[in-house]
Image 1 (spheres, rainbow, N blue to C red):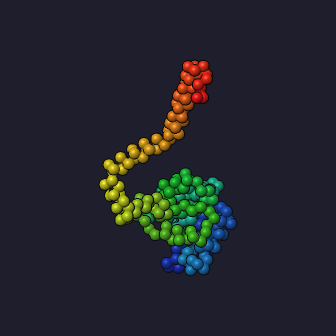
Image 2 (cartoon, helix red, strand yellow; image 1 turned 45 degrees about the vertical axis):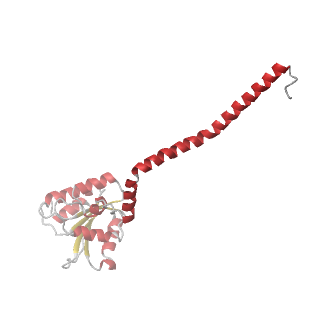
Image 3 (cartoon, rainbow, N blue to C red; image 1 turned 180 degrees about the vertical axis):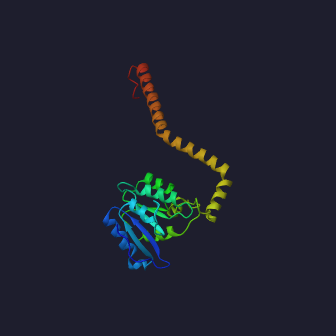
Length: 230
């Protein structure tokens, strides 16, 4: 169990990091304690959900106050999801914001945690861009509202208003409605005629050849073949 020794100063966000991986715990500590955060976070780290429960006093003992819990999802004995449910159930009057982390980007897992009350779900590894998400999730939100990160993802953008050019085009197309239908019929008729035109030419040539052959045979039979080429 790694616990920060010094007390957090006023105005500093106290974050309890819960992760069974020493590497991931260290990454979170270094990131939240970096110069870019300018002392905005005071990090306390523990290696299991059960130690987090003891630290928060959720098992009946005297607990330490924190402003946020940043927990891994997959841990032995007690998962981060179980810790999330316990925190939300045992602190109903003033629930502690909980952000869940996981190395697996599974939609069902994310939905499960958000539905259980998690403020956000971050895919590991924790990066500097995630610090702002943690800051926004620390802000108290109304009960029953959507998670802080989910609001931006789930709110559809309104369609842009039609421009004057599009409106004019739509109006013109509406006025041209009957004439456009006639034009389409004429165009389709001309297309069909162009498709059958070569066949019609061949048919005419064939009829002409048959007539010529019939005339040749008629002259042959009437003149005994002598007047065929006269």
